[in-house]
Length: 265
Image 1 (cartoon, rainbow, N blue to C red):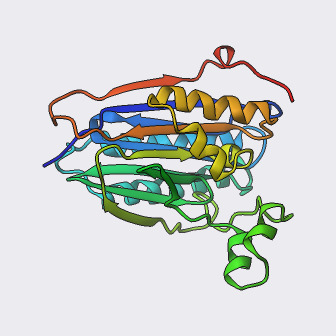
Image 2: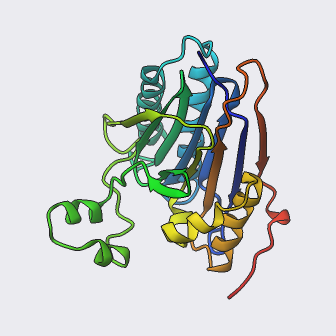
Image 3: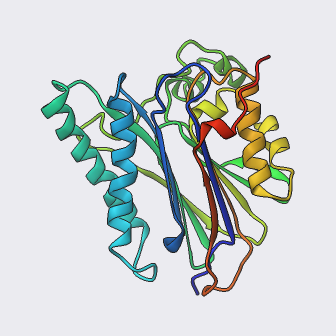
């Protein structure tokens, strides 16, 4: 049985410092797939990279029916995006890097699948407990694994922004996948590091308390902007309500920055 999800909400903002928004995202509600990508490379390269990643995924997925779509198709799309970004860098950027992180949520047959490369995160809120499902591909996480620094030291470490994996950086990209059983009432959050760079997991959990994921999304964005939003901020919230498979998915996508007040400390 393929179950649809009742509500999804996406919101993005360039933040308080950056001139360009190098984040990209896509909600493919017809296929129970949501994606966030965070570009890097400077100037317009990051913007091109993140948009290419979500466009390649969308194009690949929409050629298939939901019944036929598998995790392997999504992984292959990310690998294809990696090849295209390498070609773009060689042709237009003199082999300078145009890369992007990616994190995605796919739901099928009462199971969820989280796919990612880089440090854009996926969270699951279940029964009031927030869990980071993805694990950052970052230099500081490698240092933690090696016992060289503690989790607390990692929060303000000078290498905190150095990632060890991304789309378009190497000839090949390895995409990690975690899956699990989905429960009624589960709320998933996909976000770029512009959000997690400003908000702790405790802050995020508090913002997810409202019953409406639209209210939660607005709260997350406002909290990031209040704290200075040094990077682009993008998040997608998806709430699973076990609705009938024939019922259309409701979605709301907000990108108009004029509607988001930019507060100062």
